[in-house]
Length: 112
Image (cartoon, rainbow, N blue to C red; front, side, top):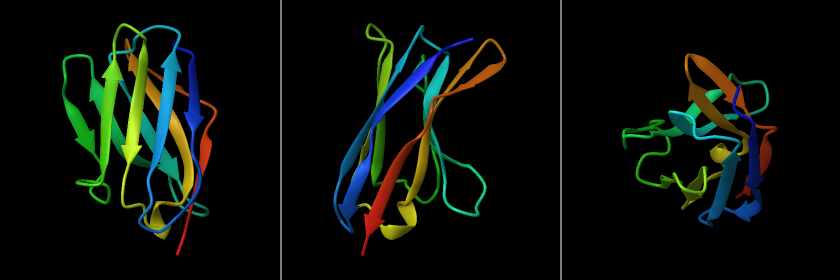
């Protein structure tokens, strides 16, 4: 199983930017983030496979950008033009050999 450690997050005003990072114990095939707002289900934010395929949640397309550094076994999520509805706990995610792994979660709070 892949161990994931997510960093970043914090509080920002609407329209602001934040950057999340995640380091893995080894490179998973797919790496990215999901988020969960209070009383809502966990949802896809963005993922990026080792061969370069990206997937974004509809609500973040055009605002968030995911990238990976294979050598450093890490991924980053640049979040621009943040909105209050982006508030939630962001979980680093990895998928490798049919197994899902999760980081501890970091809080992102966007105020209007």
